[in-house]
Length: 501
Image (cartoon, rainbow, N blue to C red; front, side):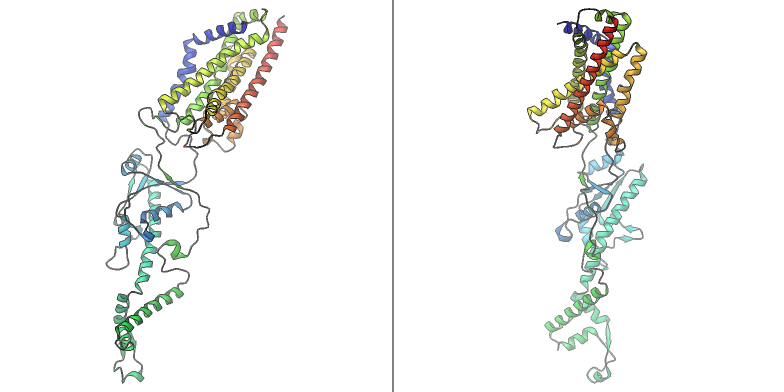
């Protein structure tokens, strides 16, 4: 009963101060909202050292193996090391991404792309797509929407596109040209253009110094059209066989780069083909922006531990006014005093956590939990974890307030756990923006453990799994830290009380 009387008094002192309420509730949400509006969609995202190529595929034709040539080009870019291909859904989105500077350029394969590639040929009737520096994109119905403010990145993206197109168009043209060597039309042309010398022993039969190859084949067939056609096919096959033997390092009949060059991709491939996801949110508040999945848990944990300063202020004020010493001289037991000062901090900390999570969910489209969660999973995430965090915060607050003799000491003692630990723990700068060993260092702080668990229940991507073992581990560590601190506080308060008596 005595504990609840003390707790009621402490809670009244904390709530009736408007400035305190502002710091506890309004300020953290205002900072989340402002940073959410100012930061870009890449905030806190781990860089993967891959060049992102954005592609819009509108190709409606078919090419090699009944697959659209645009798909061949995309697969070529995907198989290129250090390149990640992102598929854009429509032209309006592509233009919007470039206009807003989110993408330096977007490659667009227009509907007639496959048809134009199929028409490419070394023949005079075919399309010649080549120029000095590469390929005429407009001849192949390829366009690139560019951001003029990012010329260097745009040029790199265009170069990647040029190389991919060269690797699909050139083998296609060579393969078709090689096949032409066996066509009857080519052999007929060859028979007219190539003349063979007539040996002197045959001059009586063939009164010419030279005879065209075609006429010689007709003589050999006895003017049998079927036999003559068979001879011409053998000549074509012989030419192809001779050239294949001459250039045996290449498969001249192959119409793809890998087949033409007889190359094997020995590199370790990863899934570098993705679909564009809007991570920038919608509306004025950028509702649903992926960065809120980082900002909300970070500021929730950081401002929860800021209660150390506010709760400690009541301790210092009581010491300055002498009410704390009078409380120690009363028959109230030491555990009752601790519990009375402990409960208000836990209550306010829990209310602050639920306040920020609730506003984040309703106003900012914060994603909490997964559809696969059970009732027990929700209890762990929204009851046990916040309780463990608040317990650790309250224990910290009691110890700092008890050790501080004045406002200066309070500011000094509380600035380390609130500011420095928040920085190390990842509350100010996300771990993704720090070196790889930063997360290990973060686990030296209670903020690091709390933040790791809160980020697990608020996934920053479209995860399908929650690591509840990690949440339980963080909860146990926070609870253990709280018990250690409360025991130290109990011992310290007992010594102070015994010393005063």
